[in-house]
Every structure is written in C-alpha cells, then in structure tokens.
Figure 1 (cartoon, one colour):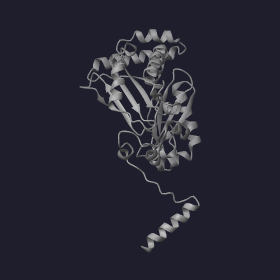
Figure 2 (cartoon, rainbow, N blue to C red; figure 1 turned 180 degrees about the horizontal axis):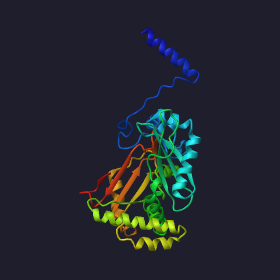
Figure 3 (cartoon, one colour; figure 1 turned 135 degrees about the vertical axis):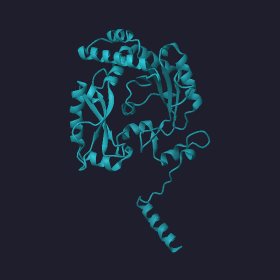
Length: 322
C-alpha cells in the first residue's frame, strides 16, 4: 500500500510540472462502439484527421515497421536520396522528386518512393539494400529500374490520353457524393496515385494466358513509341491506346469521409461500386473498386482507422472485399 501511495504522489508532482501524463489506448472496437467513431478515444490512441496527417507526413520513423533499419538509413538519408535520384532518373529518363523512405521489411532494406516532375506522371518506389555495416549497397534490389518503369509509365500515358474522361468522372463523383473528399496531396503521393478520386491500373485477367501474352506485346509497343517520341499530344496517345485490343484496365474510386466521427460502411461502398459499374461515364473497364476511408488516420502507419474496399472483378465469383 505504501508503494502505491508513493507512486501516486510522484505522479501528482509530475503532473504539476507537465509530466507523467497517463493516457489510455483504445481498441478499434471501443473506438467504433455504437456505430460511429469516438473521436476523443481515437485521438488518445494515436489517430489524427487527414489534415493533421498531411502536416505530420507519411515517411516518419514511426510508420516503419523495422525501426532499427530506418534509424540506420536516416543517418545517411542525404547520400541515399542522392544515389537513388541518379539511379531512378537514369532509368526513367526524366527528373524526379524523392517523396521519402520507409523500412517495411524484416531485413536490412528500405523502400525509397518518388514521383516524376513531368508527365507522364510516374509514382513508384524502389527498394535499396543496406549492408551489414549499415551503409547502403550500390544499386537497387527491387523495382522497375531495369525497364524504365514501363507499366507505371503506361498508366501515366493513359491518364494523359483520357484526361478529359477522368475529369468528367471526377466531377461526377464530387457532385454525387458530397460527403466525401479526395485523398489529400501527400496522401495521394504516399499511395502512388496520380488522380484525386479516380485511380486506374492495368488489370490481369486470370487464366487467360494468350490474352496476357498479347497484352505484354501491346505494352511493349506503347513503351517503344514513348521512347521514340515522348512529346505526343493527349489526342495522339489516345489514338494509340484505341488501337490496342488486349489491354485491360481496373478503375477504382477512392474516397475519404469528410466528417471525423462517421464510419465507412459496406453499404456505402457497395452503393458507389454499383453506381460506377453501371454508369456510362465509367464504362469499358475490366474491374471496378470503391474504397472508402475514415477521415481519421493512424500516426503509427499509413492507414485509416477504418477502410472499406468493395470490388467487382469478372474473375471473382461475387463482389467482395479485396
């Protein structure tokens, strides 16, 4: 009993000078009890609004699962960034900006994320190994550095070719679903997304080997044309894409709730998914997805408090989570 009294008196004394703040961390179940988000409990547990997360950043040491590796890497951050800028720009053939790095692996390596400064916009990451001594190894051990980031470049070209259509889709989403907002700029970068609200990627039909092989040839053709002349207009790129017969695309709508206390729901995501799948503005895609995130974001990892993702893919038996 005496030991407890001493502890209490020490803590009271510390509180008077601003220390020994006793806070409780709550579980997701406790934070979302009653069908809505208890914002105070969420903030006590390390969650902040998307606006606050933008200021904190997405490449802080806290978000790396391997704290020891990111600590070693940050000691030589300038050297790593300089080296990776040279490696990526040499492969991509254009200037880039480094977004940041994190250490998500159980081994000594970091992911260095970047974005191109000019169109076609490419956002990607490359993995760099650290040596036993902690210093980075020359070169990159993973990524598309060897082929000039072909797939990401093609998606960037597609976004240029269909710029007007993507703009129309974006305006429709903004008008139809005013309760949501787009990913904020830094969040968009961290997710390797090009367009707010709308994300397009190359799809891969399952068990269609011949189509996949033909699609590979078409991707090689587009990339070759890009290497030959990168200054084509949007309309010229659109005409090229329209000549392709085997490329398939997936489209997703990514949304963030404006209100901090509201929970994203399966029903809400399914409503958006059904809408875009049957809407002529969004026609012609192979797969569809609707992603809704809570406004509150985790400071210890780059993820929302709650995220609902509903997908339609003809290769799947039914619409469901991805």
